Length: 169
Image (tube, rainbow, N blue to C red; front, side):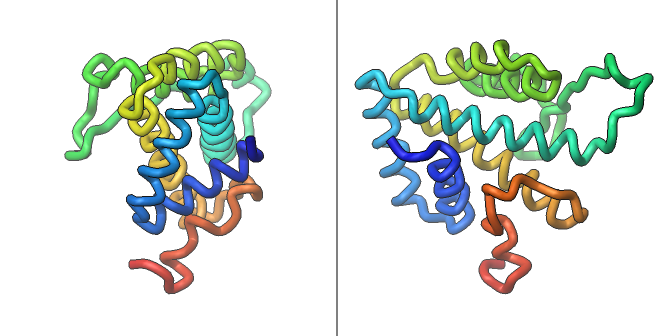
């Protein structure tokens, strides 16, 4: 097994390049790994969720002393930018969203439990559904951070900056 951060970074890069063939091959490999008892997809999902949480918390600004008991929530939107009820999402996506919420609110054990729920079905569909969404969320947050001068995890490199560097449009 390779480094989960390296794998996560590669998935982000593959998705950014719209390299569907590589994405499908990697999802098939991760599904096979899970079918054989492997944990690589879980580790990748956890790394991306932790990075998302870090970026979101940084974007929210420093926590004030009287904000010590602050809790975070998320507003979900669909492809049409309309508000989406979490119960309208599939169980794996619902669990992935709840994993992110748990991480944002500092509940690491709950994060791990929700990632387990999200990836409990050892199918290609569940693998691609969960990881593709988490990767897309990560790309969106990376782009937001870059556009707004918010620091992001260094281990993700400059993958989301390709558009600004004259790469893709």
